[in-house]
Length: 279
Ligand code: DHB
Ligand code: FE
Image: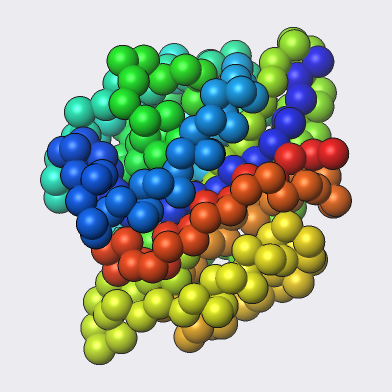
């Protein structure tokens, strides 16, 4: 049977992708951030998953103000890197697992999560930067990826509770998949950041640290955090952290924290990474 063995959450800041692609990781600004990624890469290589379910948000690359689904899932065999701003990153095409995607889509929709089904879906830095953070420079990604996009760009995004429960539904779906697959679930985004307006550059390390603490040990508190608290305490873009709750919902209630890394600043953000394993 398929099994979710662990979860990993990380920031997806586009500038991290640029630093990685342009070989700037030893520069004084980037070195402390990238050094912290080493143990996560080693861990992922050892776990060696068959599939990663990657929960991220599109940043106006595939979706525009014309249409933005709250939750969408890729069901393709391949996803092309693309991006606004710096353009597509020079990274491998992302290979999917269409059969598992369709199983997830069916299971989630019958479980009353109304997923938008994406037969075609380019993937932007929200998805490719976490892959580079966790895999480094590769010719081919070492596992298949199922992209699951959450709207955190246009108000109203889903609640933390909804995201947490989506994680639980993903868990039920994977548990019911009749194929021996080792699955890791990743959540991306955050942590605290505000990209525009008078509060641009806002970072709240204390709030981020408490979020990491409770993601491990007390996710029930996090699922009830209202949007306004994310915005007030962590900046407008801090709302991306609701995607970390999808990852958390898909794990056991009690988990083992394997690793964490937090560095300020990465571009305008508090950059976090955490690894949790089912016991
Ligand atoms: C930045 C961070 C993001 O998460 C993002 O999607 C875009 C920009 C930034 O800090 O620059
Ligand atoms: Fe983002």
